[in-house]
Image (cartoon, rainbow, N blue to C red; front, side):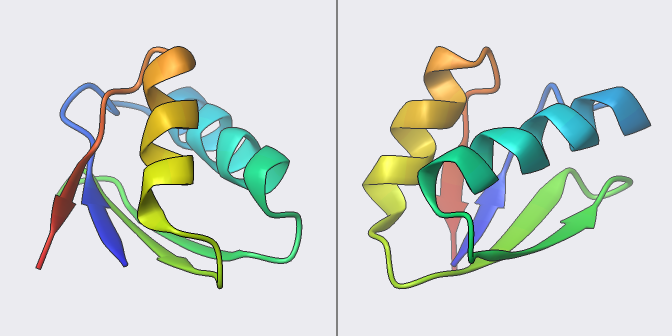
Length: 65
């Protein structure tokens, strides 16, 4: 799945986003494209678990195709 996170603007944000994703699924593979503000997550968990956790962490995310 790929998510767009508009307010992910720096390396610190990317680390926080990655940590939040890993809290949901420690085995998830996370790829960050900071300039595009995209996160690619490879996990068996549903996207809603990640978007909810990211929203709670202050990084509202929208799923992209």
